[in-house]
Length: 66
Image (cartoon, rainbow, N blue to C red; front, side):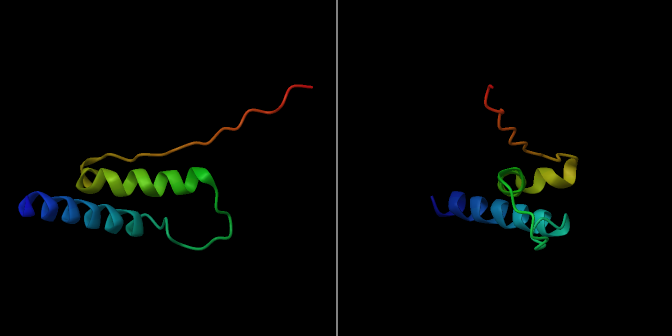
C-alpha cells in the first residue's frame, strides 16, 4: 500500500513539474476554466508529458439562442 501511494505522489509531483516547465502557473491575469483544466490534466498525465503527451482542455460555452 505504501509503495503505491509513493508512486502516485511521485507521479503527481512530476506532473506539477511539467506544468511549471510549460509556464502554466504564470499569472497573466487571464484565468479561465480552459487554463485550469489544462493544468489539472497536465498534472494528472505526470511523466507522460515528457513522452509527447500534451493535454489541452477547451471550455466552449454555447451562446444562448435568440
